[in-house]
Length: 104
Ligand SMILES: [Zn+2]
Image 1 (tube, helix red, strand yellow):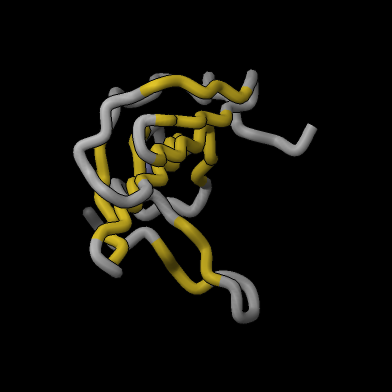
Image 2: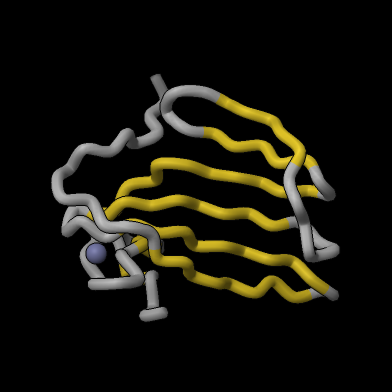
């Protein structure tokens, strides 16, 4: 995984695509797995379901879509006082046909 954070505006950092470094990257889903309860938020809805969990701590996954077509998960796994960050590549988009999470 390439670094996915760059300097942004002022003191802010800016997330960038872990596959190409482009800064136009959209959050299209967020999942929190605690125990065997997984809550997923997308632009369409909020879902809670039972899911398999191989870890002890919480897992937080952000599904992203890059405007260069890249798609994947950035996954935070908390375990024994540390938070590990993993990356999973998903099938690329051919178009900008994805649903960004907005406030409305
Ligand atoms: Zn990209």
